View (cartoon, rainbow, N blue to C red):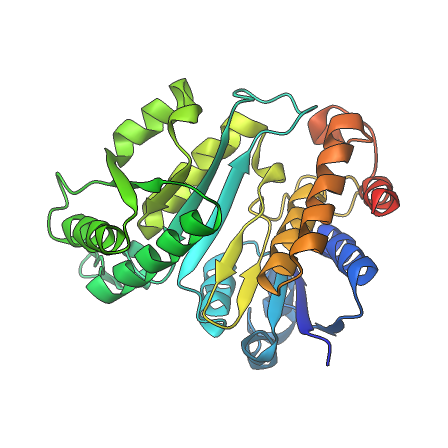
Amino acid sequence: MSETIAVIPGDGIGQEVIPAARRVLEAVDDFEFVEADAGDAVKEETGEALPEETYDLAAEADATLFGAAGETAADVILPLREAVDSFVNVRPAKAYPGVDALRPETDLVFLRENTEGVYAGHEDRLSDDLSTLTRVVTTSASERLAEFACDYVKERDRDGFQVAHKANVMRETDGRFRDAVVDVAEANGVETEEVLMDAFATRVCLDPTQFDVVVCPNLAGDVLSDLAAGLVGGLGLLPSANVGAERGLFEPVHGTAPDIAGEGVANPSAAILSAAMLLEFLGYDEAGGEVREAVEGILADGPRTADLGGDATTDEVTEAILDRL
């Protein structure tokens, strides 16, 4: 039986780039696709940003391809990550030939803890003057991320990874995270280098070649990977994978881009690169590599969308990628 892929375009340019990514997946194999939706428009129509049937589809599919959500993003993406039991968010940040990147030598991957930290959702408004946010860090989640990181670098013949944290200030939470990750790495014979997250933010801008695979707590991984996007040409080029033990959720990092939504000019590269990560997750390593090569070829040679200095439409770029495949 072919694998089932849930397709959830969401809001804004998700409605344009996710169909493009689906066309690429259709060119690779005879997958079974199930369509669903979520986001602002769905909430306006139904009262729910993430209908139960959409959650269930993601929880049951072998993999999910998701676009973006607008104001309801927290109500959509966090439960969808939960639906696939995602414990790590994989975010590559790579500069491609032909793209006007601030740091064309950038090529790194963030492995971000995906279940807790300040995104665990424990916020309270205690008075007119006081709100609180509880940060959650467990040894078990940190160790699970570390085991994934060790396997990740070994599969790619890397010697080790960097651990970004702020344990000098958040001693109990980031201290627990750091200790758990370093202990697991040592047990697996994997080298680690510690770097304070604020120092990382400076160092990666000055010389991104200092870093390769970076393991981060949840919020730090979110912020630092977006910072790295600025080095490679913008969020429109960044794919991501939310990986669970059996299922995965794959999404471009760029968001809804409401200023260009509906105009047919959105860059589909990040969504299609996310589809390449989906293919590799399902075991289609060769096909995933071919999709990535096709995208890189178009980024280098054109046609390009307006965000990269061209005038091509979403469909024209997608057709060019399909032609290369």
